[in-house]
Amino acid sequence: MSTAPADPAAEADGATAAHRVFDLLSEAIISGELAPGAKIKESALSSRFGVSRAPLREAIRRLEERKLLIRTPRLSARVTELTPVRITELYEIREVLEGMAARQAALRMQPDDIAHLRDLLRQHEAALNATEDDVYRQGTADEDFHFFIIQRSGNATLVQILCDEYYNLIRMVRRRHSRVAGRARRALQEHQQLVEALAERDGDFAERLMRRHVAAALRGILGSLDAETRTPQMESGIAA
Image 1 (spheres, rainbow, N blue to C red):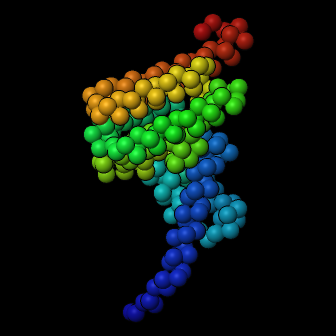
Image 2 (image 1 turned 120 degrees about the vertical axis):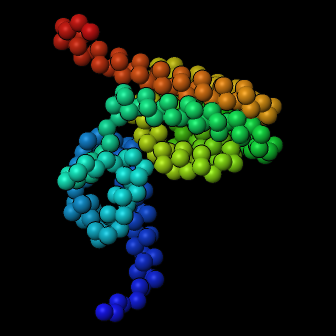
């Protein structure tokens, strides 16, 4: 039995559509428009994005690879839920791997890379000074301090794990838990200290600073979650 030859133009259009839907769904999940635990309804999303089921399912498959969606046997995919245990596991992975990335980046970064990081932090500081909401915003990969250091580590496996597989999940945690009191200013200072270690090519110190930085972020997030849990109990007269 013969098969019809593949249409390269149709395949390219399908890949483009899948990429577009992947980006749109990623932002909807990260922003909270699609709530944690929400069921992914293919028919509704196909109509919403004006695509057929094939590119939509490819986008969903990629979102599952990036841990933004979870599929259980015989059930539809659902938006991942960021429990304290899940966040802790993610940040423990970050602490180790980003520490390694900082160590390797310290040995490989060029003067232009250090200048770029310093300029990036000046932009972050200006944005922080321009608002009173005490939130450290890193909107895109191009603006992301951590993303740049990981890329400059020169380690393709670290880049794949942290910038591809886990990056959007990390962004999701940041977006949902960005209002830890006082954390934005401290994070900026920690970034500035890290840049100086990178500029000195001190891999040991850069790794220690990065690990402390990620661990401090986790403590802030867990403390904030604990406070959120206690507040409703206190308001209802239940002792924490």
